[in-house]
Length: 284
Image (cartoon, rainbow, N blue to C red; front, side):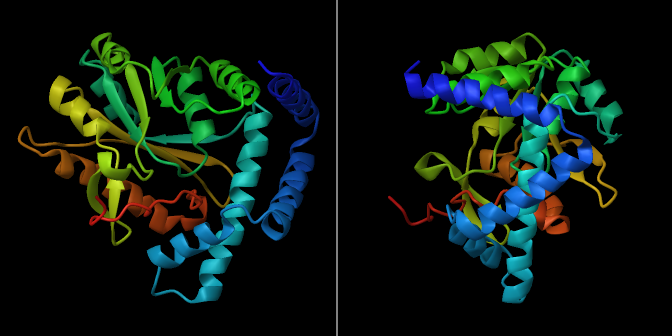
């Protein structure tokens, strides 16, 4: 690693130890101040996020959509601080676990589909600590120090990683072993994606989950978590019922619709900062 990347790694390790030494209330206060600082002084993709929210909720007033953005800053600042503070004891309620376990017992593996919604790091941490054999497909970060730190932090619970650019055969191997392949399928997929309806907009969406299903017949399970007003967490698992003749577009639309229903209930818990609608159906 370069000196800068090495410094990043040790800086993150130091901040993580410092946060773990804090009380829960102190971390909460720190996250609130961090959110306020980022909202008012670090405008990175702030306008992108606001325009995405307006696009998703055109019927709402501007002030209401701005409040969604402010609450999103607070939500993700808190969850980032919690992630750096792992392990964190949290009260988690599971919905649909019996269906998830039943799908896993079929021995075909599971195509686990989620999105950048809710406390996804807490969700993955919970799955690892439940000893589920999860392999998550991720992008490699440019800063090798940060990449190593976050990978080590996630793997404390037993979660394993595959890089998105690794040979696809490794992903098929996860399913062949009867394990769980985790995919976040809600970012702009450019020309490689399939267009489905998301928040009332045609949206280029990754079609990897649908392709894996068509070629392996492994069940697709949609999973997300959200924070409740009482500041505990609910994990929802839903096995997607798919026709054998379903197209890639139909399969992708099925789990995209499930994600949309959660976002409409808790819009402040969605990561609006992606350029979700960058690719247009007419591009190319």
